[in-house]
Image 1 (spheres, rainbow, N blue to C red):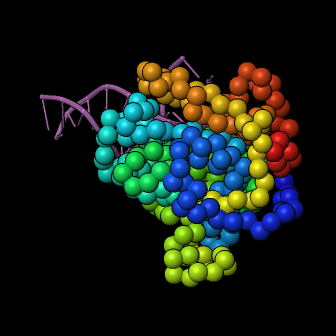
Image 2: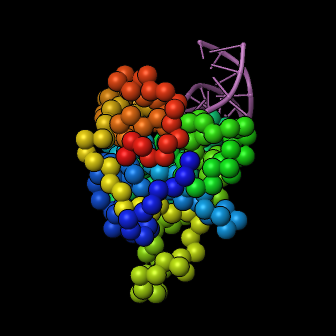
Image 3: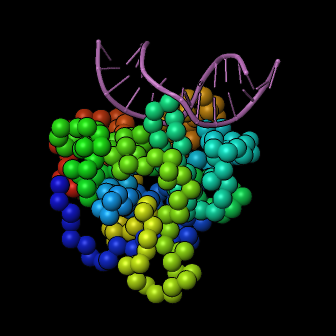
Length: 241
DNA sequence: CTCACGATTAGA
DNA sequence: CTAATCGTGAGA
């Protein structure tokens, strides 16, 4: 896998991007690049699957019914921070918090197409060779990018730099975890939505179409019927965007 | 303090 | 299909 030529310099998303409707954020995160700097090295992937979680009214959300606990505290804060939680005694999942302070909504990042640092990912996941299984699930992508509880609450945006340095230069940005716009847009026709994964207990919310995927992308965690027979031919980077 | 269970994954 | 594995949150 090699990287493509970029038309424009990547731009780290700002707070404004996240402080909008959560479904819109979920949809627009597709095609953006999640980057974790590990020992000075960029480990990254293009987001190809997300799920929106709609706070108090959403039975599938950790904040359903206004629950506010130590674990979900960052969901209650301002948008643009990482909400990382530990699940099933062994996996981490990362969300980008949406909306503004006091509105506990977030977008779960469910799958990435590996971009930079693939050798690192293979080591992290103890995989002998390149495979879609590196990042085709929320727990897997966290392991691949070395995202753990340490990253919970991290500011994913460029904004804190802009407040002190009013320049466009991102060279002095010292965040370790962020999401950037590569300049590529996933066309609406390439986005498919459907019910979320693993929320069968959520009664009415179980059927809400809050899961978004890049149509046909081989890294999507669980393909829809039409995409079901896609091969793991994959790893022609971004071929589906 | 107890205890059922989860926004998952790998493997039989 | 089930085991793995433990933090979390609701309730006693």
